[in-house]
Length: 294
Image 1 (cartoon, helix red, strand yellow):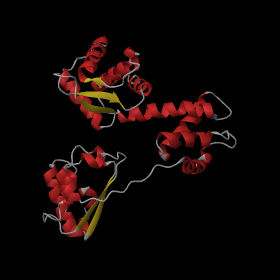
Image 2: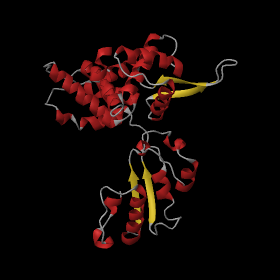
Image 3: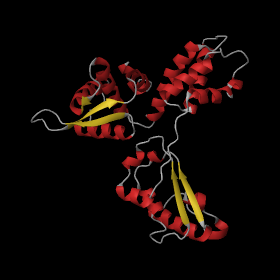
């Protein structure tokens, strides 16, 4: 951000790419804002990916604390509607934010958007029901235009693999599951093998249990031990598994709720998968390090 905002003709200095700490980057940023700008609006897309709230605190209090004289605004964009509730109270206070919620697209809007993507296919390749079905499925699930287009693309790829003359409804339904697996795999990109062991274990517990989908850390840990030992992998401590489950809850992969427990048992966390069990299993088993579990 500091390098992007720097105008060397006005500041007469360059900002190094590496070799200095975050505090020094902030010092550069305040000086750049004072020398080169009257007002700046900084847009932070996917703000929920930040490791902490420090940058929001720094930016929202820059003028109040005398670090920058220019007017400084922040637009924070997130797909997670609960993100605002997770902010530190001091950050909420200094941001004095106004919230705008954009409603998901409905089926008619999605149909209109996807009609403009017909030119990605040869004439008469899409059967008449493909775009309406894709729009309906996407509207029911998420109302996300990018995800709807992704399903349409996957449907075309599936038809191409089969050497089919047309993309039909069956391809769309298969593509929806394929797209879900891809999205979950992208969400897990960069996750350790141990995290995938844990999610695999939770998915198996869920699949095997007909009347429950929430499990205590200790139950998940027992299944995780079996999973790790089956592939001769290091077994983490139960406390470390608990911490990793909490991290996955923050990322929206699992949902953790505190239960009161029975009399004399105290409270404890129970965890459930947010995503469909089959999607989780297919996604984690794409990792070559877990293929022996398949």
